[in-house]
Image (cartoon, rainbow, N blue to C red):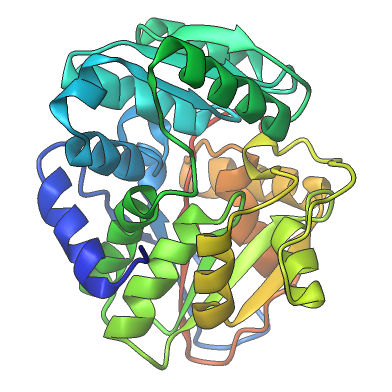
Length: 314
């Protein structure tokens, strides 16, 4: 199975009323803007339930499952945000959720998961180790495993954000998207390129977790030897074939930013806009502030603020 504009539209109809239509915000011009007349628009998906775009894919997946799969409970692995989304979806489905987190996940994520009623298991130091344990648990417990970025239902759900951007910012020229596993940018790029073939979609990864950057350079999926970033929600060692295929086809450019740049961008979002963004949520702004992305004069640029948090706060 793959993801198309039609499957993204079907996901939008399926999750309608279960998630929020998040607003866009015309941001004040950034200092030393190298592109006169360019406009920055923030898409505030940090205002979703649980504070992240992840609810889109998790809820679409829940509503795509057979009743008996839902009844067995949902299990997943996550850097934090997908786990929260699965816990939220489980609450909609009236079932239980178990979430495996790596030890690198912020304590606040585990606390929020428990507040949503999820069982939390800490396993390994990075996402990939937590995911291996969660899959093994699902095979013995019978719970339904919901991968954070591999299933077409998850990618299509995330792609609904692209439909909203096209509707809310019809003049948009460039969209900046943070990349972890790649489900968000794969879905968003698929939708936007079908609706606006001339649009640019640019992905941003941490320098310490260049999973997709390395895979694109190699021309195939690669597994990183190590991860070295504070942005745990952007830190899988390996992506998945569907995401690699869609990103290769639809994403124009991949750029890297440092943790320090994401921290500075998070501070800018807070002091300039009153938006509390975690490091992943600030990655798009970091790419602009460090000029990792070239912006043309008069362009309309949409930066997706994909996750709320305080890990970038001073």
